[in-house]
Length: 299
Image (tube, rainbow, N blue to C red; front, side, top):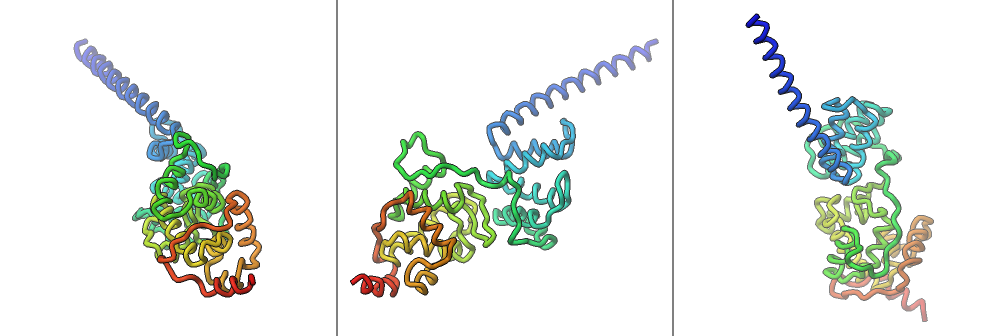
């Protein structure tokens, strides 16, 4: 009888302990869900991992992938790595090495060790289309001076950093809108990256080491715009054409190159940024030789 009572007591104590742990887990999961709902990338990634591995919640690959994707879009390196792993192994999605490679590249660019190692096992396809959840939401173009209280974090960065480079924030915001639609982890088929879509050569040229950092990317884009403004003596259309196609293309064609993409790019930005000229610092660089020819052609 005493032994039976002891067993019952042990079972009761174990049940209480289990009940306490369950209550703690429920509290933790509720807090994690709340943080994820607010868009916290770390919380989104942790919650995704629980759905992926059935840790305290039912296994749900679809839900896990949605959460990983939201965090990856926000620039979270671990989420980019995890989502890349999912596409590399076809966990809840069709296997796609191109998407896996693109995601591993994003994570590796932020210093994720394992993502860099796995890149050798997947092949990057320049025509890869990223999942819809990673594509930017097209925001309205913001070119007018906004109430500072209503600015987004990226807009605030632009307004703070642009004066340091003597570049009009309105021009920068228009460029970001067309280049990346304000997506800090945007990657083009030509490997242009980040908010201002810096290609690797341009990023290196202007000292950008963390291309997916909004601050570094904007600084790199501003430095390039400042250089182009001086090189093309404040001619906004030529500056934009060079930003899209390269300054050598502008010089080769002595104006906006005939490429449909470049002409459309210049048209989009100048439709919202109406200033044909922009102040420039002549001390930054000697003007392009083509400027003298263009001036002579006007007379």
